[in-house]
Image 1 (cartoon, rainbow over the protein chains, first blue to last red):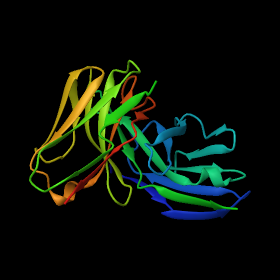
Image 2 (spheres, rainbow over the protein chains, first blue to last red; image 1 turned 90 degrees about the vertical axis):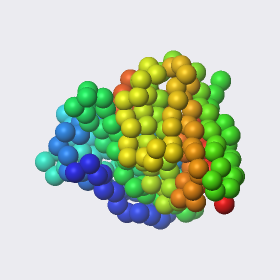
Image 3 (cartoon, chains in turn cyan, green; image 1 turned 60 degrees about the vertical axis):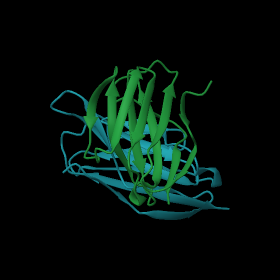
Length: 115
Length: 113
């Protein structure tokens, strides 16, 4: 129940295309859903995040779509660029009984954008 | 002006040795973390400290011992290293807890031979 599932494992998209990464969760206590971007040899960095009170959040070319009833959320990258080539992690967070939050990461999607 | 720094960046050692990884953040954050990223890039939390107090301690062998001398530092000491400990270890910090953005360090690639 603590898992966050993510698909696909890897994705190849042509420059200018749309990249779509999907995530699903079971624990309805999750209430914060960030996406992290990791370039080779670097640490992950927050890309965009959403809370379940909204169904969509857009920042530039990046959009999170959230479906609370289906317990699914997805990242859309519009007009994908070679510089977007990286590993993307979805994540979910909830408050533990001890009142501390814990972030669960999905297994990651390796995105390659080819010119 | 590095936000979260880790040393060393690479660590190659033999089985059975003891090693430490150091982490420092200059962001004034209250919470710090250690994550392990395996060869398949899976990112798993190991420990979390809030104001020098251990708040998350995942199922990690007790050969791993975190130490937080102050709010800005969280070190990881590993005893009796095993082949399976080979991974990239990331330190991270956040202003509060899980629902805040986490700032990751550059990682330490540990190779146990």
